[in-house]
Amino acid sequence: MRILVTNDDGLGANGILLLERIALSFTSDVTVVAPAEEQSGKGRSLTITAPLRMRSYDARHHAVVGTPTDAVIMALGEVMKDSPPDLVLSGINRGANLAEDVSYSGTVAAAQEAALAGIPAIALSQIYPRRGMGDSVTFEAAEGWCAKVLEKLIGMDWAPRTLINVNFPPAPSDEVRGIKVVRQGLRDWSSPKLEHGVDPRGYPYWWMHHGSVPKTVDADTDLEASAQNYVTVTPLHLDMTHDPSKAALEARFG
Image 1 (cartoon, one colour):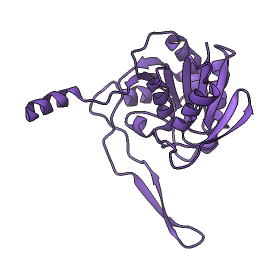
Image 2: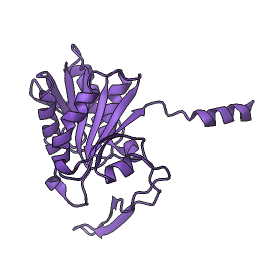
Image 3: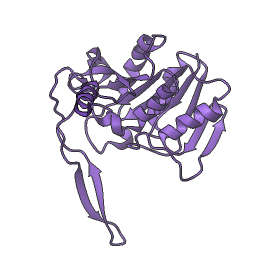
């Protein structure tokens, strides 16, 4: 089995170092192609107005100056073009990718690009309990449970153009209650918080963050399950068509 490891936190991030070690417990054939710098919140953005550049540290480790999607494209089109991966693992992200986070997430976007190419892909994220933790975020739950999740997922048959989104709860490994397969949740929308400041040169800036409490209409989603200290496993797919609305529109337009 050949595994590609990528992320959106950058090649040197603690989460990707952990994920590479876990991947190596399944196979010795692991290649890491990731953004050179943090690309959180970039979604499925592409670099199309500038050339892509890549630095190869050795045959197995490559840093792309670009987005997570760029990194996967470079991996499939250049680094691994003669022998594509059997599986793509994206993460382990520093922070949650729950509910509508998946539409912003560079971690999920990298897995989406692999799924679009027909390669099984898993996005993995470690939730942390509060803002401002930086590199002090603990990956204890991910370290204790990631291999258990992958053991169940590797080798199973997946529907075309689907991917799996996994989130590890913000709890010590021995307090994790188990693994739960759940739907993607949806928070009550609230405007992102904007913190205003002035830089040393006297120019204003705004720093965006989300401070609202997550809520959902439906129970038993990734939001509720992770809050109950479960590892959440959520299948996602690339077809965004809403079939009930399609039927209504067909009737409307005759």
